[in-house]
Length: 132
Image (cartoon, rainbow, N blue to C red; front, side, top):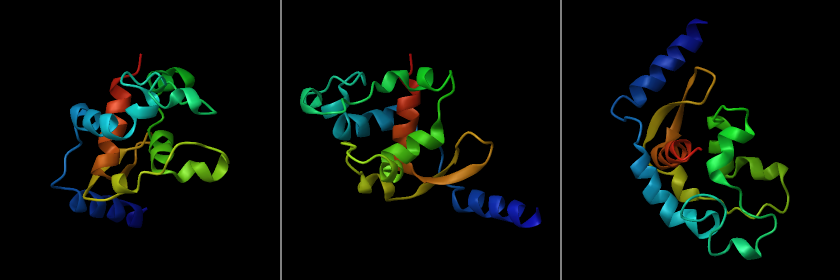
């Protein structure tokens, strides 16, 4: 218990100068990296979407697919490529550059903070903001 508390304090100290990004920061990353397949509005209708199987996901309906709860940890895992080990044939590329840079403390949904690269956190915040 004490070790867990110390680990949490160490995380907060390491990320002390970093604040969570705003949705606008993630929107710029989305436009550069995701809109070609997922579309400008995130509904899976990008320029390359027609030729892809499976079709790109509707990113505005993530919360709906998870019973009204935005699954932060899952979304981060999908973007960074971790979950593609379990889904052969997945068309989504890995975004290694989103894993570089300073980290910010992100509550991934279980009340615990996890250090996440700022660009990856920004993209997650943007996706959370476009849920309908």
